[in-house]
Length: 187
Image 1 (cartoon, rainbow, N blue to C red):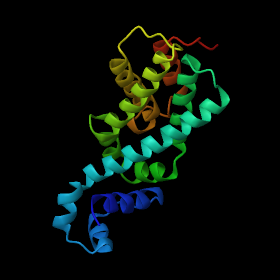
Image 2 (cartoon, rainbow, N blue to C red):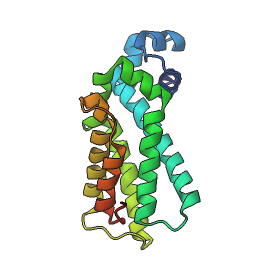
Image 3 (cartoon, rainbow, N blue to C red):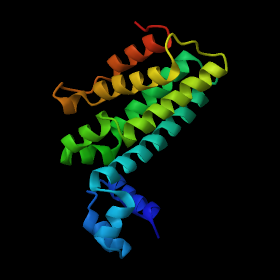
């Protein structure tokens, strides 16, 4: 038993739309709260890890789905992966429950440097680097900087409804990503 067990239990709670409760986790694992905090940090740090892992799972599913449709790769593939990812995130029941219950905690975790942004940027960076290495993508900016820019643009527009801007603006984010990766602009 260790930190991975805590993350697994917290992930299950998140996916079930339940709050991540540190006391309940400690009780379920039969450990003290001090041990729990030593293993995974505070509640927000644990939520960050849980959300970062959910980000990776969702991104990998989006990559596989996009690859099965567009085996050629390149800018259109990158945009397709990002589009599938954004739509899946917004449809995720666990995320909906979390953002209804604790919108400001989520915004703080998702839009500031930390586990979620680091994981998302690494995933986008890997996607861009792979497409560049395979000769299917030429970028005007360094891959690491562009990956962070794409994540920030997508976060801002994906969570617009939580930032007081009405509804999520996925199409706007995708139009910006299209420009950044040199994809054809759609009408």
